[in-house]
Amino acid sequence: MTGTGDSGTGTSPDGSGSIDALGTGSGVGRAGADSRTPRLSRTSRPSRAEYCVVACAEAWRGAGEILASPMGTVPSIGARLARLTFAPELLLTDGEARLVAADGTVEGWLPYRDHLALAAGGRRHVMMGASQLDRYGNQNIACVGDWRRPVRQLLGVRGAPVNTLNHPVSYWIPRHSRRVLVERVDMVCGVGHDRADGPHGARPHRLVRVVTDLAVLDFATPDGSMRLASLHPGVTVGRVREATGFALTVPDGVPYTREPTARELELIRAVLDPGGARNREVAG
Image (cartoon, rainbow, N blue to C red; front, side, top):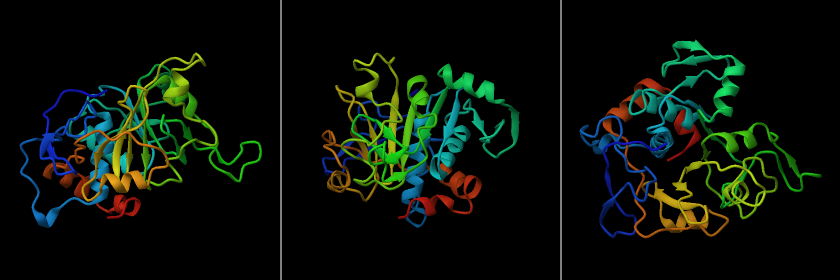
């Protein structure tokens, strides 16, 4: 669901110089609300959380008239930012029974049966959390340890299998660590590429991106395994590798996550999250 838009440029973290921040289709370097907006002054530099908001918003670029279902503070701000800027057709919900505008104004009624119809028909893009996530995008939110006798019980499987087999899915990880990004999940809830496209016969699905407090990851590799798409400013490739519990594909010249425009930053700070809840979810 990546669409057209002005491209931006960034400097690769390895110091190799100016590169196309669009990379290989990850969408991390596309311009935001207005590519002509002046660059931010040093006194108004974005926080790490604000880079994360923009990275989450980019998941819905060019999505069209589909339902965005963000889970978490930063993804929720990101979805509303996308709606106000480059994805005006995006549908937002209050999480109960109504379609709403970015400011919460009620736009329509969304009964449960219609919500399920959107999900089953592929007209939804959810950004879920994950207690564990492996290299192929298999997600666990159910338990830690053997599912027959878990060490810790979590949310349960819930709608994760249907989400991953019916419509685009992204993930939000507010604390990038080896406890979350693991070699093998203890229980598969959300289905990864190795299972969806393997001998189990499941139909193809689409995992769009993983946004963490350190980086943006995607699955643009031949085997559908996770790849480092961009680094948030101040983060190194080494730090991401150290915080990841599996061998991560790292292409040459990884770009930085694009900077919020001045207009986007104004919307985040003054309109969408004046109380600063984003900075309580992501520090720095």
